[in-house]
Length: 410
Image (cartoon, helix red, strand yellow):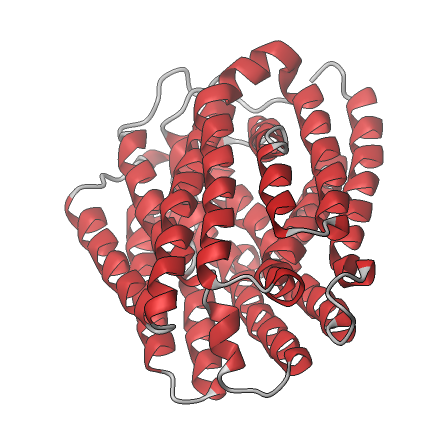
């Protein structure tokens, strides 16, 4: 794999600043995860309609992300990371307020549109981390961002579940307040990381999300990895879009129960990405670690779908630690093959893959779940969406093994 020339010194800035921003942002998003599917249920009748409309809302959010994420990433390459981050924080605050005040299902769609158009924090934060990291420690920097993301999900869903038991709208007000606090923090504290001399001209072609994906596919040196990242992301997005409804239908879980489960997810993610990732990379290398993580995910998806008791889900989450290392390992490999001045475009394009997954997978996953919602809770077919996730992971393993065999010199 050809390697880009990377600076030996990090750019001005401090990764801790961006980690706090990501943590606060994810805390706000995490607050609403246990309650959003249930809020949809207040505007529709029946489990199948609840699943289908929640899938549609998630798809609209993903569509807006897909259309705007590459543009925001490319814009950050032109004007700097900081202005785009501030725009994202303001948009997420407005999104939460619209959702909290929504008098109808249509207004929930308005909130999802605003949120999708402004949710650039992860891609631009990843570009920020790339700006201030050395070539050698980028995977570890991405791991720290993943850990901040995970820590937000340690606190957010747990708090959201507790608040949701008191009122389904309350988590959205708290999330809006946190986004506003994040905006103030970013405005007064976070420095710019991209030096003026490294800024790229803004070209219309780079604003097209399909062009961004096409450029990724045309890069033969990472094409296999793009396929792997796509499959892994699609499986994750299908899990995220069906988890709360699945556990509600099958185990009769409350927002509090799902908050605890997502606490376990965040805790596992933080332990791996903040504490163990550097050790795991030294022990296995990025390629082997990616394969181990994807394999662990494939097994766990199957177990999720076959679980007969709610407590089993907690056990499977905590046994799936290696899966949390796969993403940073893959991201680090791709980043090392990309020039410094194109990191924002790269991260925006990679994030658009996840957004494309949010467009497609909720419609599929919630349709599978909705079609099985009339079955007894013990019927294994209710877990059909998770079995499809496992199949995508297995295909990703095959593609990744082939890619790594032909790029052993990377």
